Amino acid sequence: MSETTEQPPQPDPVTGKKPKLDLTGAEWLSSDEGNGDVQIAFVQGYIAMRNGRDPDGPALIFTQSEWDAFVLGARDGEFDID
Image (cartoon, rainbow, N blue to C red; front, side, top):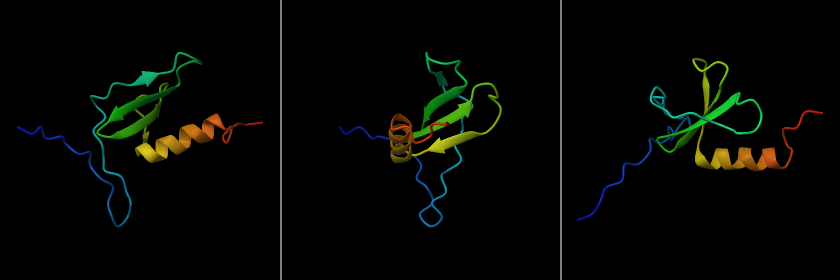
């Protein structure tokens, strides 16, 4: 018997727009470092990021490859403010 794995919703092939995700049941995680303003959640194969001070505000949605590029850029200092 084979187990079926539900595939995450895919971006629109024409526009590249990501699907609207239901974040109401998301488990939001905060870093142990800093003041926890940035929170992330893993939802349906995507990574959502929001401002923990405004949990009802908007969330940025990343694909796995976008998230990987963001994390590598942050580690390399790409977003440092002088």
